[in-house]
Length: 560
Image 1: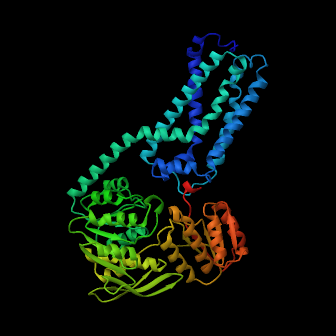
Image 2: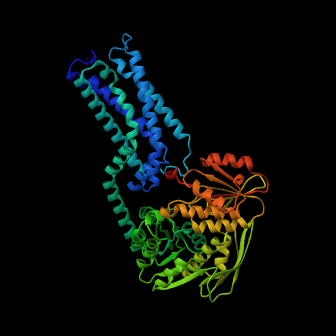
Image 3: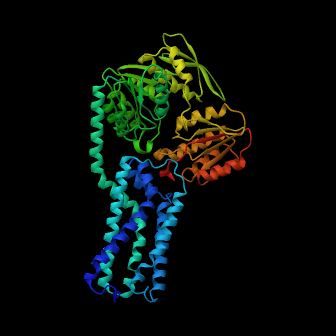
C-alpha cells in the first residue's frame, strides 16, 4: 500500500505536498548547480560550441562523468539504506521515512562539490553577462526538471501502490546529477536565440560606430603571436597617439564589439586582434572592422583540429586582406613561408618585415641575447639604422617587433620614436616571460597556447642560458590527426635541448615519452605527473640552484 500519509490521488497535490515538492526541487536545483561548475567552465572555454563541448564529455580521458556516476551510485545506495532502516521507527517511519535518505544524498553531493572546488581552474570562469544569463536559465531548468521528476515518481508510486516503492521513490532523485551536463546544454539551447539577437545588436552598433569614426584601424591575425604583436604595437603607437586595443585575447566578433563600446572621438588608432577556429571567422571580423592595416604574424597548423587542413588555415588568415579597407595596407612576416605565400597572393599595397629577406620594409640584425633581454639593430628602408633593446626573449619576439614597427612607421612614427617605444615594451604574460624568484634559478613561463613555431622559439631561448635545463609540458593540442605525430617530434626536439622533462597529464604522455626516448634521453630523466600541481611538487624535489626551468604550454580545462 501507499503510505498512510497519502491515501488518495488528490492528496499528492495538496498545498502542503506541493510546498514540499517545491522545496525539494529548489534544494536539488541548488545542489546540482554547484556540482556543475566544471561543465559551465568547459562550455565557456569551448566558446559555447556544442560539438566541442560534447566531444570533451565523450572523451575517455574526461573523468567527470565517472565521478558523477559514482556520486549517483553512493547517493542511491545510502538513500535506500537509510530509508529502509528508519521506516520501522514510530513517527519517522510514518510518512517522513521516505525523506530520511536525502541526508545521505545531500552529504555526498556537498562532498563532491567541495572536492571539485578544491581543484583550481587553469583559466577561471569569466563572469560575463552571457554567463549570468545562462546560469539563471540553467537554475530554472534544474528546478523545472526536478519538480517534474518528483511529480512523475509520485504518480508512478501511487499507481503501483507498493509500500516499499513508495518508501524508496525519492531515491531516484539521486540519479539526477548524471544528467547535469545535458541539462546545462538544454539551458544553453534555450538561451541561444536571445544570445544571437544580442550578438547581432552589439555587432550592428559596433559597425555603425566604426563607420562614423575617423580612427585608423589595424587588424592582426595569424596562427601565433597575435596578442604579442598587438601589445607591442600598442606600446609603440601610444607614444604619439591615443590607442584603443582589444584586451587580453578578445579576438571574437563579440569581444571586438564590446571593446568598441569604449571608442570615442579622442582615439586615433584601434587595434583588433582577430582569432579563428573555422573558415569564415576572419571574414566576419574583417567585415566588421574594415582595417586600414592588416598584419599576418605567420601561419602554421595551430587549430588544425577544427580547420581540417593547412590550406583551410591559410585561406582563413587571408580573409583579413580580402575584406579589409579597399586601400588597405598588408604587412606580412618575412620569416614564415606560409605568410610569404600569402604576401605574394595579395595584390594591394604590401610590405614584409623580419630578420630574413632582402627586400623588407623593416629588418632586424645583430641580435644579441642575455638574461636581461635582447639588443639588435633595427633597419627601416630609407632610414638610418637604430640600436634597440628589449626585455623580451627570443628571436620570435624580434620578428613580432619588426611587424609592429612596420605598421607604426607607416602610420607616422619615426625610427627614433620606434626605438624609444621598443625600450618601453613590457614582458607579455605567459609568453616566454621571465618569472622572478628568490633563488638562483631561471624560470621561464611559456604556458600560453604553444604551437610548432612557439616550440622552436622556446628552444632557442632555452639554449641561451647556462645550467641544467628542466622542461614541464603537457605537449601540443588541437592538432587533429597530426597531434600524435607532432608530439612525437616535440619529444625528440626536447631531448636535444633539455636535460630533464616532466610530462604533465595523460593526453599526450605516450607520444611525448616515446619521442624523448627516440631522441636519446635517458628514462631516468623522463618524469610523469598526472596534474600540473603534482608536476610542481616533483619539480621542487629535483630543482637546484643554477637550474633553468621552462613551463611550455598548459592544457586548458577542457583537456583535463
